[in-house]
Length: 161
Figure 1 (spheres, helix red, strand yellow):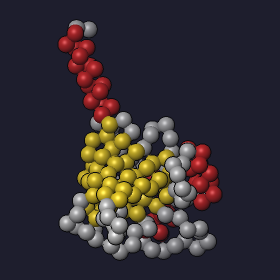
Figure 2 (figure 1 turned 180 degrees about the vertical axis):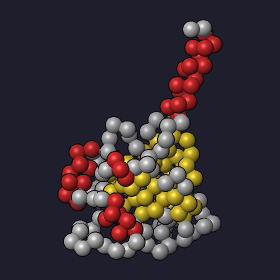
Figure 3 (figure 1 turned 30 degrees about the vertical axis):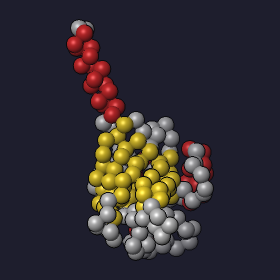
Figure 4 (figure 1 turned 60 degrees about the vertical axis):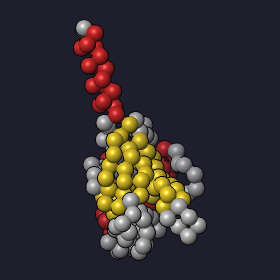
């Protein structure tokens, strides 16, 4: 391989890594404090028994009979929606995904209830883990802007796109 061809191959390999796809689909909220391990997520998933059917029921405000209080994150290439958003919250709306470098994808979120505000953030989704972390930066609050971090668990390959 010639030097220019080798350099082009390295650049393409690096670009492919930098341009990896962000996770999209449905994810179960991790309710405990701290960053979960894959085992922590596996334990929550085993206890809760999440499903796409239950997630959609929660999204539409119909708590499935007999289920524990569980929350979900719906992520698509242009939308973020949680099943626990209250009116006036900042975590549901139009999503503009940025580049994915390694395990992290940057984004901008325009909340439905605050269309004049843009929240920056990132999605951290290690490929060797079932955990996903969403970081919303400088979310307005009564005490001033603050970062908001939430952890989620992958629970079924069919819920990821």
